[in-house]
Every structure is written in structure tokens, then in C-alpha cells.
Length: 86
Length: 86
Image (cartoon, rainbow over all chains, first blue to last red; front, side, top):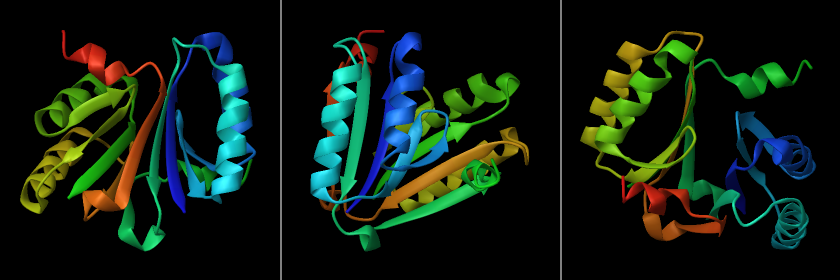
């Protein structure tokens, strides 16, 4: 399945959350990650993220079971492409 | 159809882009908007956003034709709920 995860967490935890999500998904821009992932891996990912975050933090998870039901379009600069060279 | 729009634009244009997207979609958190919208309105929205942004800015558009094909889950605090009281 395909997921989009966006987060809004306390400044001190931004780096940790970003690093953790990067283990499972592709960084898109700012606080947005996306990618294909299995249910098992997603469960593991979220369980690990929950250990880092507090109740004041927000994690938004959009799940699209079949990636064919979604289209993605980038207008302007595709920053995830830049990332390939870092 | 349901769309998720995330943006990463120059500091000077953040407010303008945010204000424009708010006319058409619901703010979720940080630079993320979502909501149900018709093709016609989305076209108008993007056309107006393009007038504000430059080539250096990034707008990511995820489109899910049938909202039933997507699920949304909020972990932690739902910031879009706070917004209702502003």
C-alpha cells in the first residue's frame, strides 16, 4: 500500500522523527514522507515514531491501499529529486 | 475527488500560498492542505497558486479520485480541529 505521512512535532523531536521515517519511507519535502510500505512495516514504523513523540505532537497518516487509485503531480521544483544527490 | 496538497515555497510567498489554498481546501498542519474538490475548482486553484509561486517553489499534489480509496488517521493532536475555533 501507499502512504503519505506528514508531521508537526516539537522542535526538539523533529530530527528524530525525520530520521525514523527516513528508515521506512521516502522524504518528499519539509515534514512530508511518502512511499509504498507493507502493513507490518508501517505498524513497526508507527510504533517506533510513537516512542519518540508526545501527545502534543501530530502525525497525519493517509493510506491508499492500491497505489493505482492515486496520482501524484509536482508543480515547480521536485525536491525529492535533489535528495538523490546528497 | 480528494486531494492532499503540500508546499515548500520561498518565505515571502508562504502567506500568500496558504491564503489561496485556504479558499479551496482545509488546512491540516504546517504546509499541508486537504479536502474534497471538483476538477474545475482544483484547476482554478492551481492556476491561481501558479501565479504566486516561482520555479524554485514546490507544490505537491496527491489526487485520489474516489475518497473511499483512502483512509486518514491522526496520531496525537489533531491540529485541524483547533483551527475550527479560530
